[in-house]
Image (cartoon, rainbow, N blue to C red):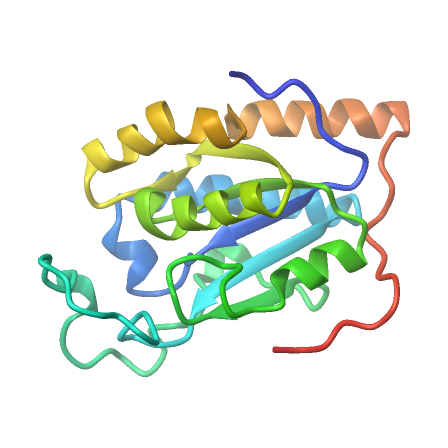
Length: 207
């Protein structure tokens, strides 16, 4: 279903938009949309969460799988492979979450950061749709957050996997939307004065 509303204090979470990973997906429009969303959230004092994968080898406990490692993660990575793409224009107030598995909640203090700021709704984008983004969306749903899934701010190496997440999984976890719809709702709520800035209540331990 289309996004119907934004909470007064939503957070934008962008998953794995870092060198090598983002540029391996059909991500150029995704990066542009993500940057536009980040700029809009920052301008309104709303939380922007940038998630990056710490280990080039992915999960801390990968286990055995039938599928081989993705080609873009094979071999020796460049030293700056984990750096966020320049287009995101990282801001000092952004929350940086370093994960070691697919989802942004597992093994991190993301939930604590959000709850300390009174955040109840997540606007989500990033790569890959069916892996890092979907894993984060499932966990956010299990943690009780409202979800707005920005389908034109996410991408996947496999178009069929992207479409399956968008059509079959995401409608069961939250509301699907577009960058334009989110920006329109942000502007409307700013006009109506319904936003509350993302301030921290208490202290947050760093990961």
